[in-house]
Length: 222
Image (cartoon, rainbow, N blue to C red; front, side, top):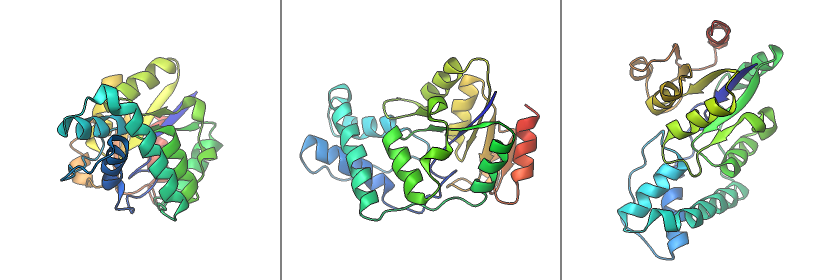
């Protein structure tokens, strides 16, 4: 069995929504019940769990005590904003790539720093649809301190499967290496092709669109 573990933001979906970093800060404010200023800059590639922990600790809150409440608030805000009309755009070529994988009997699944709730909201809101993915083989970062925690969980849960991670940041690569999973990089996030070529990716493409055959060939070669 071959399972493709897709990242969500910057890979399946474009980072066209500008309120992502602010959302984390607002979630912490909602959970603790007061305004916190100034917000921290967001680092791309971090898990939800990592970002919330950074914010809580920066403002002097015990992350262990407050994390569950902030994660609940983050999920609630994501659902609220989706209902209010916040939508993300599907990255070019993604539908074709998913179809090509399905045609070969591969499983399209998720490996993302987002929670399962936030992933569903984003995928359904974009029109791509959460039902395109195998949720029993998907892995999420709602509570993970580091992205490598998610990749190690994937490798442990699917020890006999061929796995490949497709993502858009060097953090995806670092986490893939930590679990011994091959990585394919796509430059539809904030990192350029040149920056991603400095990772250990088995393939780097500017977009999935126009490069589906290369991506498929790289997976078939694993």
